[in-house]
Figure 1 (spheres, rainbow, N blue to C red):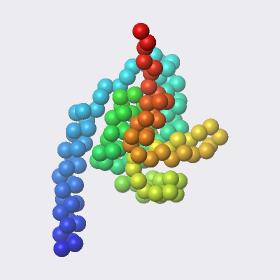
Figure 2: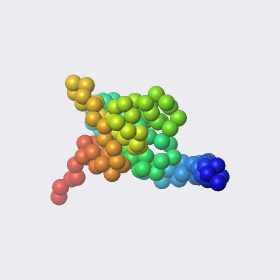
Figure 3: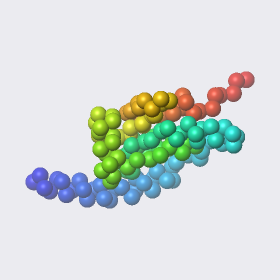
Length: 134
């Protein structure tokens, strides 16, 4: 019976993964526009960030959509299919849980940020343009 459930869920995942990924492509928002100088500053800041994720994870998709909305070129590290990235996540962050944002601070100190809502809030605080006041 255990074998049945294992194969059932694997088959279900194989069927749903393309649907989830197509849905992500169709619903990803257009990125915000910045001046070339401001985008260059953002690009430079994003070089010290990496998102550990699974392609079809709904929480990872949520973070990737926010990255697209904010026009953030953050490196994606697939921990589902890349054993090296999985090992880095476990060794550095202490657990294999996605999404996880690796933040390398000045001086080389690493911060591992888990939870999609926490990651989204951090990205918005750091990269979202301030609202214009009337």
